[in-house]
Length: 131
Ligand code: CO
Image (cartoon, rainbow, N blue to C red; front, side, top):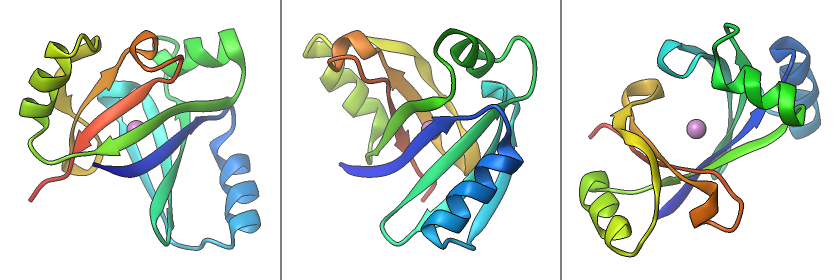
């Protein structure tokens, strides 16, 4: 298991990219629209992981609701694993609750989310990269 990325919900993607890229001196930035999650994402590649800045792309976006309720800030951490399906089964048998099935995420990944109630208040994505 590895830490894959840290995702931050923002109101203004352009402004957030400006702030983070300047502060962290990162110029390796990818942009992606993830329709399935209702977000436009900027991915900042650091040496040992990524920071993903997420802006909602519609009123029905879960990130829109998050921003309205809590304001901008840390949204989830993502843990990378191989054999995501067997990890989900293993964790489910340990009593971990998931938010939805394993589904396609950004950049060809397969993802699901662990309910914050199962992780002491932290929303966590479980993800597997394509081989
Ligand atoms: Co994520």
